[in-house]
Length: 333
Image 1 (spheres, rainbow, N blue to C red):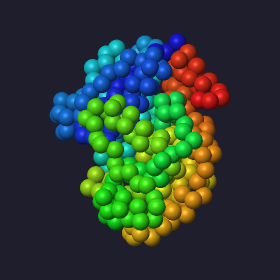
Image 2 (cartoon, rainbow, N blue to C red; image 1 turned 120 degrees about the vertical axis):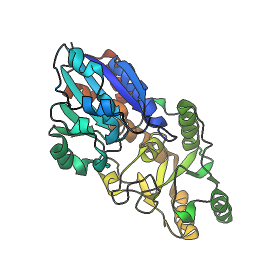
Image 3 (cartoon, rainbow, N blue to C red; image 1 turned 90 degrees about the horizontal axis):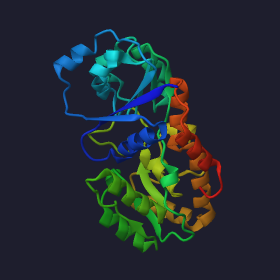
Protein backbone atom coordinates (compact mmCIF):
# COMPACT_ATOMS: atom_id res chain seq x y z
CA UNK A 1 0.00 0.00 0.00
CA UNK A 2 1.23 3.49 -0.89
CA UNK A 3 0.01 6.34 1.30
CA UNK A 4 -0.33 9.92 0.05
CA UNK A 5 0.76 13.36 1.16
CA UNK A 6 -1.26 16.18 -0.40
CA UNK A 7 0.47 19.56 -0.60
CA UNK A 8 -2.12 22.26 -1.26
CA UNK A 9 -0.71 25.66 -2.23
CA UNK A 10 -3.46 28.06 -1.21
CA UNK A 11 -3.62 30.99 -3.61
CA UNK A 12 -4.05 34.53 -2.35
CA UNK A 13 -7.21 36.48 -3.09
CA UNK A 14 -10.85 35.60 -3.62
CA UNK A 15 -12.19 33.21 -6.21
CA UNK A 16 -10.21 30.11 -5.24
CA UNK A 17 -12.94 28.58 -3.06
CA UNK A 18 -13.54 25.64 -5.44
CA UNK A 19 -9.87 24.63 -5.25
CA UNK A 20 -9.77 25.02 -1.47
CA UNK A 21 -12.75 22.68 -1.36
CA UNK A 22 -11.07 20.31 -3.79
CA UNK A 23 -8.03 20.05 -1.52
CA UNK A 24 -10.20 19.07 1.43
CA UNK A 25 -12.19 16.59 -0.65
CA UNK A 26 -9.08 15.06 -2.18
CA UNK A 27 -7.39 14.63 1.21
CA UNK A 28 -10.49 12.99 2.70
CA UNK A 29 -11.04 10.56 -0.18
CA UNK A 30 -7.38 9.55 -0.36
CA UNK A 31 -6.88 9.47 3.40
CA UNK A 32 -4.00 11.84 2.68
CA UNK A 33 -1.99 13.92 5.07
CA UNK A 34 -2.98 17.44 4.03
CA UNK A 35 -0.19 20.02 4.06
CA UNK A 36 -1.39 23.54 3.27
CA UNK A 37 0.96 26.43 2.51
CA UNK A 38 -0.11 29.97 1.63
CA UNK A 39 1.12 31.70 -1.48
CA UNK A 40 3.11 34.69 -0.22
CA UNK A 41 4.12 36.07 -3.58
CA UNK A 42 7.70 35.79 -4.73
CA UNK A 43 9.27 32.49 -3.69
CA UNK A 44 12.39 32.86 -1.56
CA UNK A 45 15.82 32.34 -3.10
CA UNK A 46 16.66 29.39 -0.80
CA UNK A 47 13.50 27.62 -1.94
CA UNK A 48 14.34 28.30 -5.60
CA UNK A 49 17.84 26.91 -5.10
CA UNK A 50 16.47 23.90 -3.24
CA UNK A 51 14.41 23.05 -6.31
CA UNK A 52 17.63 22.28 -8.17
CA UNK A 53 18.76 19.64 -5.69
CA UNK A 54 18.51 16.01 -6.79
CA UNK A 55 15.48 14.16 -5.46
CA UNK A 56 15.69 11.05 -3.31
CA UNK A 57 13.29 8.19 -3.95
CA UNK A 58 12.51 6.35 -0.77
CA UNK A 59 9.64 4.77 1.17
CA UNK A 60 6.20 3.77 -0.05
CA UNK A 61 4.67 7.20 0.07
CA UNK A 62 3.43 9.41 -2.76
CA UNK A 63 3.21 13.19 -3.03
CA UNK A 64 0.48 15.07 -4.88
CA UNK A 65 0.94 18.83 -5.23
CA UNK A 66 -2.29 20.74 -5.90
CA UNK A 67 -1.17 24.03 -7.46
CA UNK A 68 -3.46 26.86 -8.61
CA UNK A 69 -0.87 27.94 -11.21
CA UNK A 70 2.47 26.66 -12.55
CA UNK A 71 4.40 29.17 -10.43
CA UNK A 72 3.02 27.61 -7.24
CA UNK A 73 4.87 24.37 -7.92
CA UNK A 74 7.93 26.05 -6.42
CA UNK A 75 6.39 25.43 -3.00
CA UNK A 76 7.03 21.71 -3.47
CA UNK A 77 10.66 22.48 -2.58
CA UNK A 78 10.27 21.25 0.99
CA UNK A 79 12.51 19.15 3.17
CA UNK A 80 10.16 16.16 3.01
CA UNK A 81 10.64 16.09 -0.76
CA UNK A 82 14.20 14.92 -0.23
CA UNK A 83 14.35 13.54 3.32
CA UNK A 84 13.34 10.75 3.36
CA UNK A 85 11.81 11.40 -0.06
CA UNK A 86 8.86 10.01 -2.00
CA UNK A 87 8.38 6.87 -4.01
CA UNK A 88 6.27 8.75 -6.57
CA UNK A 89 5.32 12.41 -7.07
CA UNK A 90 2.71 14.22 -9.14
CA UNK A 91 1.58 17.79 -9.72
CA UNK A 92 -2.00 18.84 -10.49
CA UNK A 93 -2.00 22.34 -11.97
CA UNK A 94 -5.34 24.14 -12.29
CA UNK A 95 -4.52 27.29 -14.31
CA UNK A 96 -2.18 25.31 -16.52
CA UNK A 97 -2.47 27.80 -19.39
CA UNK A 98 0.18 30.05 -17.72
CA UNK A 99 3.06 27.98 -19.10
CA UNK A 100 5.34 31.03 -19.13
CA UNK A 101 5.13 31.05 -15.32
CA UNK A 102 6.39 27.52 -14.81
CA UNK A 103 8.60 27.25 -11.75
CA UNK A 104 12.13 25.93 -11.97
CA UNK A 105 11.09 23.15 -9.58
CA UNK A 106 8.74 21.72 -12.20
CA UNK A 107 11.17 22.21 -15.08
CA UNK A 108 13.88 20.28 -13.21
CA UNK A 109 13.79 16.76 -14.67
CA UNK A 110 12.89 14.08 -12.17
CA UNK A 111 11.13 16.13 -9.50
CA UNK A 112 7.67 15.18 -10.76
CA UNK A 113 6.97 11.74 -12.12
CA UNK A 114 3.62 12.86 -13.51
CA UNK A 115 1.89 16.16 -14.25
CA UNK A 116 -1.87 16.68 -14.51
CA UNK A 117 -3.24 19.77 -16.24
CA UNK A 118 -6.69 21.17 -17.05
CA UNK A 119 -5.95 22.30 -20.62
CA UNK A 120 -5.85 19.32 -23.01
CA UNK A 121 -4.37 21.26 -25.92
CA UNK A 122 -1.24 22.00 -23.85
CA UNK A 123 -0.23 18.43 -23.08
CA UNK A 124 2.65 18.40 -25.58
CA UNK A 125 3.93 21.77 -24.41
CA UNK A 126 3.89 20.71 -20.77
CA UNK A 127 5.62 17.46 -21.65
CA UNK A 128 8.42 19.35 -23.39
CA UNK A 129 8.77 21.78 -20.47
CA UNK A 130 8.82 19.20 -17.68
CA UNK A 131 10.09 16.03 -19.33
CA UNK A 132 7.36 14.14 -17.46
CA UNK A 133 4.29 12.23 -18.63
CA UNK A 134 1.42 14.73 -18.76
CA UNK A 135 -2.23 13.82 -18.24
CA UNK A 136 -5.50 15.67 -18.61
CA UNK A 137 -7.46 16.19 -15.36
CA UNK A 138 -9.94 18.96 -16.22
CA UNK A 139 -12.05 21.20 -14.02
CA UNK A 140 -14.78 19.40 -12.14
CA UNK A 141 -17.33 19.85 -9.38
CA UNK A 142 -18.43 18.13 -6.20
CA UNK A 143 -21.77 16.91 -7.48
CA UNK A 144 -22.57 15.09 -4.25
CA UNK A 145 -22.50 18.46 -2.47
CA UNK A 146 -25.10 19.88 -4.87
CA UNK A 147 -28.34 21.09 -3.31
CA UNK A 148 -31.53 19.10 -3.69
CA UNK A 149 -33.14 19.60 -7.11
CA UNK A 150 -36.17 21.84 -7.36
CA UNK A 151 -38.80 21.37 -10.04
CA UNK A 152 -39.49 25.09 -10.14
CA UNK A 153 -36.62 27.48 -10.52
CA UNK A 154 -37.87 31.02 -9.88
CA UNK A 155 -34.76 32.72 -11.26
CA UNK A 156 -34.22 32.72 -15.00
CA UNK A 157 -30.57 33.83 -14.97
CA UNK A 158 -27.95 34.31 -12.28
CA UNK A 159 -24.72 36.17 -12.86
CA UNK A 160 -21.56 34.31 -11.75
CA UNK A 161 -18.17 36.03 -11.87
CA UNK A 162 -16.72 38.46 -14.41
CA UNK A 163 -18.76 39.52 -17.44
CA UNK A 164 -18.28 41.55 -20.63
CA UNK A 165 -18.87 45.28 -20.33
CA UNK A 166 -22.42 45.04 -21.72
CA UNK A 167 -23.40 42.60 -18.96
CA UNK A 168 -21.30 43.96 -16.11
CA UNK A 169 -23.89 46.19 -14.41
CA UNK A 170 -26.29 43.97 -12.49
CA UNK A 171 -28.87 46.71 -12.00
CA UNK A 172 -28.99 47.49 -15.72
CA UNK A 173 -29.24 43.80 -16.56
CA UNK A 174 -32.08 43.22 -14.11
CA UNK A 175 -34.01 46.23 -15.40
CA UNK A 176 -33.63 45.26 -19.05
CA UNK A 177 -34.58 41.66 -18.24
CA UNK A 178 -37.68 42.73 -16.35
CA UNK A 179 -38.95 44.49 -19.49
CA UNK A 180 -38.94 41.07 -21.17
CA UNK A 181 -40.54 39.31 -18.23
CA UNK A 182 -37.28 37.69 -17.11
CA UNK A 183 -36.05 37.35 -13.53
CA UNK A 184 -32.31 37.97 -13.23
CA UNK A 185 -30.14 37.81 -10.11
CA UNK A 186 -26.87 39.68 -9.72
CA UNK A 187 -23.76 38.03 -8.43
CA UNK A 188 -24.06 36.30 -5.03
CA UNK A 189 -22.41 38.32 -2.23
CA UNK A 190 -18.76 37.37 -1.82
CA UNK A 191 -17.91 35.78 1.51
CA UNK A 192 -14.36 35.76 2.83
CA UNK A 193 -14.76 32.17 4.02
CA UNK A 194 -14.39 29.86 0.97
CA UNK A 195 -16.88 27.30 2.27
CA UNK A 196 -19.54 29.93 2.93
CA UNK A 197 -18.93 31.48 -0.47
CA UNK A 198 -19.29 28.15 -2.25
CA UNK A 199 -22.49 27.40 -0.36
CA UNK A 200 -23.96 30.75 -1.43
CA UNK A 201 -23.00 30.11 -5.06
CA UNK A 202 -24.61 26.66 -4.96
CA UNK A 203 -27.84 28.06 -3.56
CA UNK A 204 -27.98 30.73 -6.26
CA UNK A 205 -27.30 28.22 -9.03
CA UNK A 206 -29.81 25.76 -7.62
CA UNK A 207 -32.70 28.20 -7.95
CA UNK A 208 -31.79 29.39 -11.44
CA UNK A 209 -32.51 27.97 -14.87
CA UNK A 210 -29.42 29.55 -16.46
CA UNK A 211 -26.04 30.82 -15.24
CA UNK A 212 -24.25 33.66 -17.01
CA UNK A 213 -20.62 33.01 -17.98
CA UNK A 214 -18.44 34.21 -20.86
CA UNK A 215 -15.04 32.97 -21.93
CA UNK A 216 -12.09 35.32 -21.38
CA UNK A 217 -11.86 36.00 -25.14
CA UNK A 218 -15.00 38.16 -24.90
CA UNK A 219 -14.74 38.92 -21.19
CA UNK A 220 -11.10 39.78 -20.49
CA UNK A 221 -9.72 40.97 -17.16
CA UNK A 222 -6.23 41.82 -15.87
CA UNK A 223 -5.95 38.36 -14.29
CA UNK A 224 -7.09 36.32 -17.32
CA UNK A 225 -4.80 34.98 -20.04
CA UNK A 226 -4.64 37.42 -22.97
CA UNK A 227 -4.82 34.79 -25.72
CA UNK A 228 -5.65 31.33 -24.38
CA UNK A 229 -9.27 30.43 -23.61
CA UNK A 230 -10.14 27.98 -20.87
CA UNK A 231 -12.98 26.39 -18.97
CA UNK A 232 -13.40 27.20 -15.26
CA UNK A 233 -15.51 26.13 -12.31
CA UNK A 234 -18.29 28.52 -13.31
CA UNK A 235 -19.34 26.03 -15.98
CA UNK A 236 -18.90 22.85 -13.95
CA UNK A 237 -20.48 24.16 -10.75
CA UNK A 238 -23.49 25.49 -12.66
CA UNK A 239 -24.13 22.20 -14.43
CA UNK A 240 -23.68 20.25 -11.20
CA UNK A 241 -26.58 22.29 -9.85
CA UNK A 242 -28.62 21.72 -12.99
CA UNK A 243 -28.26 25.23 -14.44
CA UNK A 244 -27.56 25.62 -18.16
CA UNK A 245 -24.62 27.95 -18.81
CA UNK A 246 -25.57 30.92 -20.98
CA UNK A 247 -23.01 33.23 -22.61
CA UNK A 248 -20.00 32.19 -24.68
CA UNK A 249 -18.14 28.99 -23.83
CA UNK A 250 -14.45 28.36 -24.60
CA UNK A 251 -13.71 25.86 -27.37
CA UNK A 252 -12.42 23.28 -24.86
CA UNK A 253 -15.92 23.03 -23.36
CA UNK A 254 -16.88 20.73 -26.22
CA UNK A 255 -14.44 18.10 -24.93
CA UNK A 256 -16.12 17.53 -21.58
CA UNK A 257 -19.60 19.04 -21.82
CA UNK A 258 -22.63 17.74 -23.69
CA UNK A 259 -25.04 19.18 -26.27
CA UNK A 260 -27.37 21.62 -24.54
CA UNK A 261 -25.03 22.25 -21.59
CA UNK A 262 -24.40 25.76 -22.92
CA UNK A 263 -26.33 28.29 -24.98
CA UNK A 264 -24.94 31.34 -26.74
CA UNK A 265 -25.82 34.92 -25.84
CA UNK A 266 -24.63 38.09 -27.56
CA UNK A 267 -21.67 39.34 -25.47
CA UNK A 268 -21.79 42.92 -26.78
CA UNK A 269 -25.49 43.79 -26.95
CA UNK A 270 -27.36 43.31 -23.68
CA UNK A 271 -30.86 43.55 -25.10
CA UNK A 272 -30.09 41.26 -28.02
CA UNK A 273 -28.63 38.74 -25.58
CA UNK A 274 -31.65 38.94 -23.28
CA UNK A 275 -33.96 38.39 -26.24
CA UNK A 276 -31.99 35.22 -27.01
CA UNK A 277 -32.28 34.20 -23.37
CA UNK A 278 -36.04 34.77 -23.46
CA UNK A 279 -36.34 32.11 -26.17
CA UNK A 280 -34.26 29.63 -24.17
CA UNK A 281 -36.28 30.25 -21.00
CA UNK A 282 -39.50 29.57 -22.91
CA UNK A 283 -38.10 26.20 -24.01
CA UNK A 284 -36.74 25.26 -20.56
CA UNK A 285 -38.27 22.32 -18.67
CA UNK A 286 -37.48 20.83 -15.24
CA UNK A 287 -36.16 17.76 -17.05
CA UNK A 288 -33.37 19.96 -18.41
CA UNK A 289 -31.96 20.51 -14.94
CA UNK A 290 -32.30 16.84 -14.05
CA UNK A 291 -30.38 15.85 -17.19
CA UNK A 292 -27.56 18.29 -16.44
CA UNK A 293 -27.23 16.97 -12.90
CA UNK A 294 -27.10 13.36 -14.07
CA UNK A 295 -24.49 14.04 -16.76
CA UNK A 296 -22.44 16.17 -14.35
CA UNK A 297 -22.24 13.20 -11.96
CA UNK A 298 -21.10 11.04 -14.84
CA UNK A 299 -18.59 13.38 -16.48
CA UNK A 300 -17.65 16.26 -14.19
CA UNK A 301 -17.38 15.03 -10.63
CA UNK A 302 -13.99 15.60 -9.02
CA UNK A 303 -13.99 12.00 -7.79
CA UNK A 304 -13.42 10.76 -11.33
CA UNK A 305 -10.34 13.00 -11.62
CA UNK A 306 -9.05 11.94 -8.21
CA UNK A 307 -9.49 8.25 -9.04
CA UNK A 308 -7.48 8.68 -12.23
CA UNK A 309 -4.67 10.41 -10.36
CA UNK A 310 -4.63 7.72 -7.67
CA UNK A 311 -4.31 5.05 -10.36
CA UNK A 312 -1.34 6.80 -11.95
CA UNK A 313 0.29 7.19 -8.53
CA UNK A 314 -0.20 3.45 -7.97
CA UNK A 315 -1.56 4.33 -4.55
CA UNK A 316 -4.40 2.91 -2.51
CA UNK A 317 -6.73 1.22 -1.91
CA UNK A 318 -9.00 4.10 -0.89
CA UNK A 319 -12.30 2.82 0.53
CA UNK A 320 -13.86 6.29 0.88
CA UNK A 321 -13.17 7.12 -2.75
CA UNK A 322 -14.51 3.80 -3.96
CA UNK A 323 -17.66 4.18 -1.87
CA UNK A 324 -18.42 7.67 -3.18
CA UNK A 325 -17.76 6.65 -6.77
CA UNK A 326 -20.47 4.10 -6.14
CA UNK A 327 -22.80 6.84 -4.94
CA UNK A 328 -22.28 8.73 -8.19
CA UNK A 329 -23.46 5.69 -10.13
CA UNK A 330 -26.44 5.09 -7.85
CA UNK A 331 -29.96 6.48 -8.18
CA UNK A 332 -30.83 9.90 -6.79
CA UNK A 333 -27.26 11.06 -6.22
